[in-house]
Amino acid sequence: MPSDLRSVTLKDSEGESINADNVVGVDESGDRGLGPYVTVAARCSREVDVELVASLIENGLQPFKHKSSSIVKYGSLTPEERADRARSLLEDLDGTAITWAAIVSQSNPSEMEQAAAAAMAVKKSITHGLSTGAVAHGCGETAVIHDGAKDEYSNYPQKLRTLLSSCCDSSFQRSICSVYLTYLQEADLVYPQTTVADYIAAYIREQYENDEPLHHEWICEFDSSWIDPAPQPDPIYRLERFQPVREAELQSRVIAWLTGRGIPQDPQPTGQNPYQDLVGEIENECVYEYLRDLE
Image (cartoon, rainbow, N blue to C red; front, side):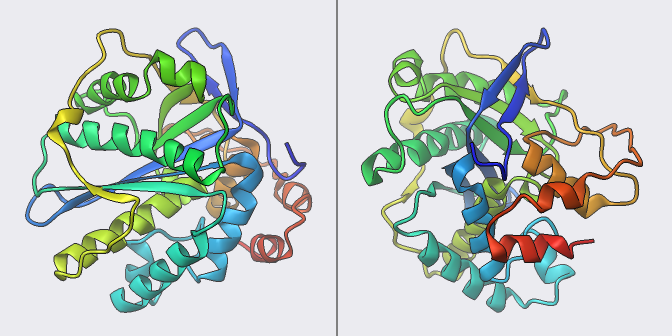
């Protein structure tokens, strides 16, 4: 790993650690009412994370500060400007080591359909990398970071783990990579893979709503045959907990990303702030300058 980033650290139910040097971010766009529901997974290794952040910065999408909804509401962009920037981001990602997949579902999908779409998007984001050469067989542990806190009162997390274990079965995990599912509240403001998934999902949904569907080989329609739960699903993991810096929300998100951890729902802030030291390790000038002044 470069000095810029640490591996993402996951914990199992017994507190044992798993270090992942690949990340798939998952996000969804749609209110389960009228209109299409779009699920996107975006994948790259931690070695490419800084490049991914640079792409977001260069396209004016303000990672760590904003996501697709807030950049219009609070970031002074119009929906049209956001769409232009998301389109430019997609163009910049072509031919890079960053791969993604989008699943377009009909309006008001069931929880099982949502879970099947997310599981297949994860698988396709990895296998698309095989076709481009960005992913190699045996590429190592992969953290699947789903945006949003794990809801103990919803059946969705359990459905996703059974369907992900079916899509990425034991043969897939032995041959290509092991996958570890976790959830993180506001992951789309912490991990750039999830930020990218958020922007792409919103852009594709808007194109469909405007009767201008985006044509790309990595976008496909939902297929009900994907609903095939595994009988023995893998567990859901949690990210190693990070104590955010008191009164430094944006900087805390960056620290969590750089150190491969997650801010818990019940954080215990600290006065210690390693932000400038960590950011100072980043060699990419665009990313360094953006983060240096982030407050």
